[in-house]
Image 1 (cartoon, rainbow, N blue to C red):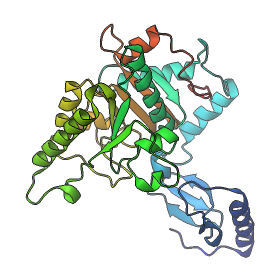
Image 2 (cartoon, one colour; image 1 turned 180 degrees about the vertical axis):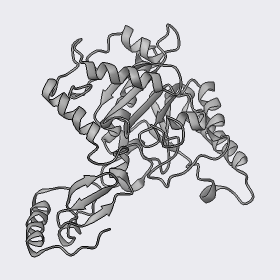
Image 3 (tube, helix red, strand yellow; image 1 turned 90 degrees about the vertical axis):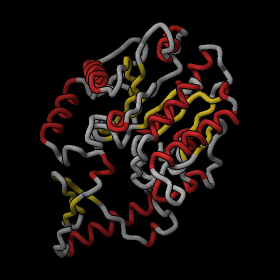
Length: 338
C-alpha cells in the first residue's frame, strides 16, 4: 500500500461518497450492521496488479478482484476489444435461433480447451447462475430419460458454489444457509476432504480418500441410488480453505459415481484457466465431468456451462435437445454480444 497522505479536498470528496454508499448501497458478504460505522474503501481506478482508492492511496490487489482480473486492471488489449464490441454490436440476445460472432467464437474456444471431450456451451452471467443451471439440467435430464425420482444432488461440507438459492444450497457453508431457509430440498452434503483437519490419527491420504469414498457410497445407498442424480465438486475447494484433494480422492469418488450412474459436475469457477497449472483443475486432479461450470478469469463478467459429448447414448445433452428443452434453459444475457 502507498501511504501517501490524502489532501483535504480528496478527504472531503471521499466523505461524501462514503456517506452515499452507506445510505444507498447494500453490500454483498459484508457485516451490514457494522457497515455504517466502517469507513468504506472506495476504489477509483486500477492498473496492472494495483488499484487506487479515491484518496490517492495505491494497493497491490493480491486477490485479483476476487479472482477475475487475470490479465491485470485496465489491460489495453481488453479495453480495445470492449470498445470495438460496443461500437459494433453493444448487446444482443441468443434466444429463438439468434446468435452473434462473439458467442460463437467463445463457445468454440471453450470446447477446444475442455478437459475431456465436450460438445456444447451454455452461457450465463456468474458462477452462481452456471451452477443453478447445472441443477436444472440434471433435473431435466432425468425427467427426459424416464427417471423422475433421480433428482438429489450431493455436494460437500465447506464447499462454495455461489449464493443464488440453488447454488447457496449446494455450498456447504452454514452461515450461507442460516436465516435464508437453506438448503433447499434434494440437496445433500457429505464429508469435506480436508486431510489435515479430518483424518484419523495415522491415517494416510489414500486411506482417508478411501474412507470418504466409502461414506459417499453409503450415503447414496441410504438415499436410494435411483434418487441421486449428481455430485458437484470444486477440484480445489476455494472458500472452504483452498483445500487440495487428498491423493486418490477423485479417482475413488468417480468410481462410486459411475457405479450408481450419478453425474459429475465440476465447479471450475476459481480453478479453471490455468490456476492449478493445467487449463482446468479437472485435468490436474483427474476429473472427467459430465458438466463443467466456469467463470471469472476466462469469461470475466460472464460464466459458461460446458456439457459432455453429444452422442446417441448416455449423453445428457442429446436428451435435452431431442426433447425440446429450448425454453427451459435461458438467462436474458446468455451469450450476449458486447
